Amino acid sequence: MMRPMSLTPTPDQLALLQHALDRLREGFAPLPDAPANSARPEAAAPARLDAQIQTVLLEAAARLQDNFPYHHPLYAGQMLKPPHPVAQLAYALAMSVNPNNHALDGGRASSAMEKEAVAQLATMFGWREHLGHLTGGGTMANLEALWIAGQLAPGATVVASSQAHYTHARISAVLGLPFESVPCDGYGRMDAGALERRLAKGGVGCVVATMGATATGAVDPLGAILDLRAKHGFRVHADAAYGGYHVLAGNLARPAAAAFGRIAEVDSIVVDPHKHGLQPYGCGCVLHRDPSVGRFYRHDSPYTYFSSAELHLGEISLECSRPGAAAVALWATQRLLPLERGGEFVRGLEASREAALELHATLAADPRYMVAMAPELDIVVWGMRAPSVSESSVLARRVFEEAAKRDLHLALAEVPIGFFGGAIALMHANQPTVTALRSALMKPEHREWLGEIVARLGEAADAARGE
Ligand SMILES: *Cc1c(COP(=O)(O)O)cnc(C)c1O
Image 1: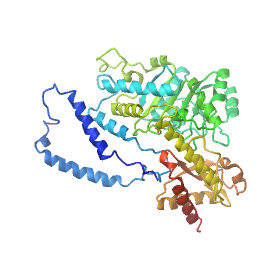
Image 2: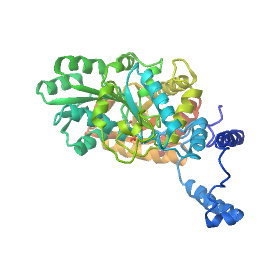
Image 3: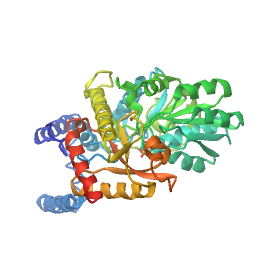
Image 4: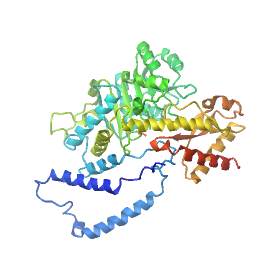
């Protein structure tokens, strides 16, 4: 069995960090010697300071033990994927300079690296031209995309599916834009017919296509949405915070592959490198297809942007200070693992998807469980068979707890009973939604650990059913 991904870089890798820090310092060698923080009182007693730091760090380490083991393949719950060692090391390396990618004054090299890394993401979606930058996360990135939509069509309605991330309703409220949701089909994908009926009433400025819904990984029918755009005229924003990288995956089923095949035609895209892109938190990305939307970001800061006439990222971003280290980590990760079909990074995504398909098939063949449609990406949602929907929900919560006692960490999701089609028809449908179990199988190792995961789940299911 493959060894679980380690929590941290190995000792050898930490030595590489020291080596890289030394290399970085060489660049500043001509400066007169000025030991770090030499003016501070604690500099007089470095050994005492180190001892104090050690105490505090060990205390923090002990506190941090109060976490689920996110790095381990038996953590198969929420969207959590450990950052790659190269991302961790590059982040630490850059943090020693602590560049600020707001302006070139604060982060010259890291701004250039951000532009390169973001251009690679745009290329992944088939864009040669774009305007884009990194953000604190998917929420901020989606806010910028909907803000541009609102600037272009003031007061027009934003529409997303009922399975879209809840952030779109909230962001629309922040922006003062009306928001409406349209229903989904049995897969959790936007119902294109329902969208068309809504469009016929007029007043829609932007449709959010969710490319990988947070609960189930469902991919909205982007082709149908784009065809409706040709008829009705509105902006299409692809929220690919979770699923964006799957545009490169070679093993999607036909509907999802067809949807990703047309992603280059949308107006804006959000992708979260801190979800599937092996980055530490604090790394989202927004991309606009038409660079001229940069005009909406214009502002007159009296105290930044004096170092050059080149583009400062703060001129095309709503956030001001941003970590240059996040850009360096992403740049380094994409340098090591290029965003290429068939490459190592994409093979990892494909392994996750294989794990999800296999888990789905295994659960479907077991009378204790009921499954939704086959996963479109790598998220599996399943329920517990019981006489009624309410009993099924109670049982799912109990399985969740029994699994955790066996070091198998799952997630719960509240989904419409329609997700389970025929299986639910056999139950007393005494409530409209059902609590289901959910696994985001984001780690490539999940494929090899599937036997272990299914065995522990089976024990948990029997314990929950009192068997
Ligand atoms: C995670 C997610 C978001 C929110 O992004 P954050 O990075 O958590 O702010 C938005 N949309 C989708 C589809 C997501 O999966």
